[in-house]
Amino acid sequence: MHTDKSNSMALSWAMGGFQFARFFRSACIRVHRLVCLAVLMSITCTLDASPTLELEYVGLAVKREETHVWGSSPVIGPDGKVHLYVAQWPRPVGDRFGGKTRDGKVTGWTSSSEIAHYVGDRPEGPFTFLRLAVPDQGGLLNAPHNPTIQHIDGKSVLSCIVNTDGTSATQRILMFVADDLNDQWRPVAGAEADGTILRKSEDPSFWDHQANRGVSNPSLIKHQGKYLLYFKAVIPLPEGVQGEPWQKGHTWTYGVAIADKLEGPYRKQPGRITDTYAPIEDACLFSYNDRVWMLSRDMNGKMGGGGLLWVSEDGMRFDEAKAQLGFHHLDHYIGKERAAAMKVYRGVPEGHLERPQVLFVDGKPAYLYLASGLGFPAPYGSASHVFRMKWKQ
Image (cartoon, rainbow, N blue to C red; front, side, top):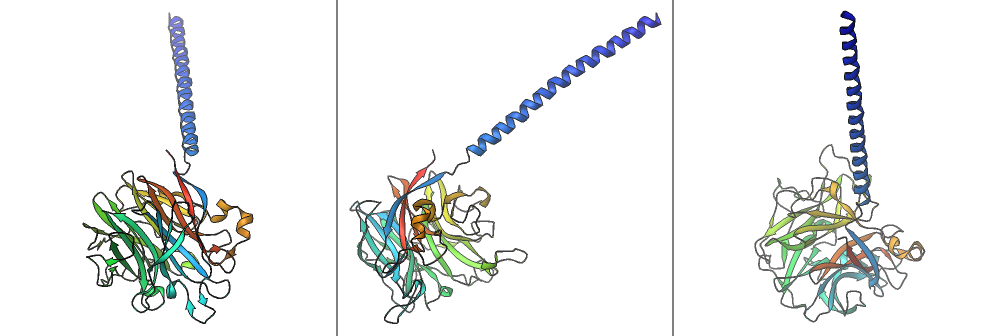
């Protein structure tokens, strides 16, 4: 009787162990499948992580004899043509970005830049010089530079920067408005008499108060019924934040000023638009598909040193961790052999692309205009280029 009970218990234990083994094996198989599924999803996400935007090189936008050509901002006019507002200045003697002209005059973007008006029948060009839209007036309106042109609320709006002493330390932002593109520009209603719409803050508690190059590089959009004017300021890095040696203890960063009406006044917001202190330069912002997009230079080489594409739901905060590749260097598009035959007036032999400016066609960002310090031999200088924007669906 005792023996039968022992055998029964042994059999019961054996059966329990067998069932546990089956359960354990089944559980392992399920875990294995889940792990495989997670790996597959990871691989799929990685493969699907291609850039939202790709660029196709179209060709040269503007180059001009004895002239350095820089940022070129496009808009489609009432005549159906593409109008470019272009920063340019006399080319100095030698392969330099600034210096002296043959007649001994000082030239460079901070001393003699002007905003020229070019026009073409198509976004691809060619573009022909029409006239000076905002000439260099010296003094308090010295060297108008880095223009950006928009058509908003039935009006043409032109923003740019100027300085007062031939240096970047005194930069401020101007905004003009007109009913057409005949270059009869007038200061917006919310600006100072000369068109100044933004200056460096005089409030010691404001984040841009210590900016050592004033405020500059405006980008204007209309989003969700508000008018957003983005601006750059070069500020000291906070204690404990380490930058690259070339930054010399400073970073290039952006803020935004908001208005209820196109012509202002514009009110600076208390915070910057990024939480990072990585340098941001040449930001171009645009509203598309109910979001705000930003193209900027990739100054810290996050994705190779070309450009970054950022996105925000409200235009007030942009997350660097979600930034994508926006564009490469110029040699990626034109080929290394062709790039090697050009002149480096500014930047690197690969050709930094700078000052992105977007042209909308039928409500969609369709063309991108970029400047480069990799230019053409004398008698030409730096030039601007046009790219077709291909959006991933």
